[in-house]
Image 1: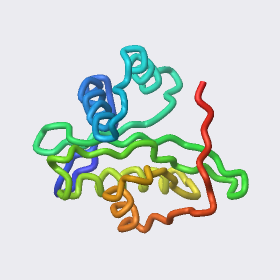
Image 2 (image 1 turned 90 degrees about the vertical axis):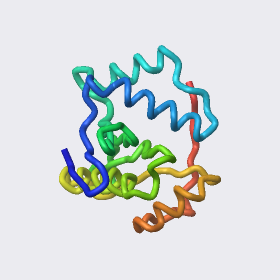
Image 3 (image 1 turned 30 degrees about the horizontal axis):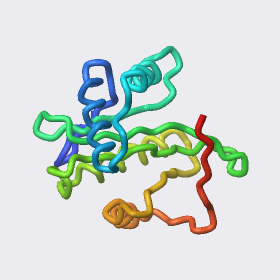
Length: 154
């Protein structure tokens, strides 16, 4: 557990899974996306707690309530010959933004990457999300203008 002045951050475990799903739903609402289906929620559960977990998730608690989360996983850079910690989601409920909880989650994932010997940390930000862009720029995030994100959805 990481204790900051604003939040307690814990690795996701089964006892917090329903709270985690609630936060994922809150992010979907914020981004005006469809909430995960029951099947997707089951896959999240299986991928978090299976024999070979596919991602790490961390929950931030403020005054005993779950208020934010981060999902991270490793990719690999052949040129650095080191893993990269990839921040898939970082979300804090709007009602508690500005209290340092997002910073604590970000720092927690960044520290994990450093501890694992990662060569870098990467993430993506939606182009309309000015509050997130401003947040990451304050964290010394560099906007990589020369890279474009592409996707194939199955």
